Length: 321
Image 1 (cartoon, one colour):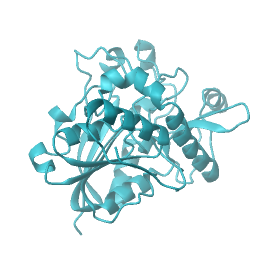
Image 2 (tube, one colour):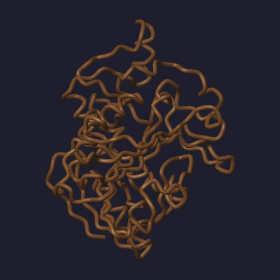
Image 3 (cartoon, one colour):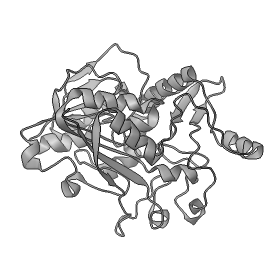
Image 4 (cartoon, one colour):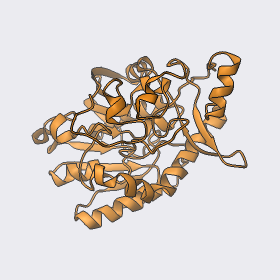
């Protein structure tokens, strides 16, 4: 693996198939918030207290950026633990879009492999670069990026184990050190977008590095999950907060320093950010939970997946004018 560690600010985002580590009271890799400077309340006073006790707090712009930077540290420090827990499901060189188990080999959301082999592909929020490794195994020119140095190290280990070398840049998805119009396809599988307060910048960077007509595909936690507790059983089928409440979820240590955060956008927020960045939305995919998938991943699982969507995949094309 060719790894380049760039001396840039981390204000970040995160991990490749960064689909969720279990948490009981609040989200954990389940996409949260966008407030664009508009502070929105969680409801009545008692409701606010309950949400605050579960980790949902209003934050100002500076604190939001601190929380985003904390995510970079968190994903870097927990990279090996994450792969130990979820590596078998993700595979070292497989392309999994979400906990429902949607594989690119079947979905073809990036386009036919025969077409991709003649194109340049960029993965952001790549984690250990499993998706890019799958693409390169099939002869596609793919470059992986992630903000977490720990994930770059994990990617190097998987390169050695699989014999598939993935070029890797350590960089913030909101400030990519890449040329304009350098790629034909850009994608992320649960990376970056849930972990920054300004996800519009992620979309804008994807648009910048894409050629006109290029394809941008991103999977995120389905926004409707924000209203429900992170419980994969039937107990997680009762809404506990407003879908429209964009109060971030954050975890702090004993000193009050942020250690982890997630930011929520509604479906409408996602679409508007894509359009504002210069994209035409081609498809919104809501994978159903397949009967053969018995895997439980945080708030995702077959029991709740029968009734609620867990993942939203947005497929867009950069406008040509």
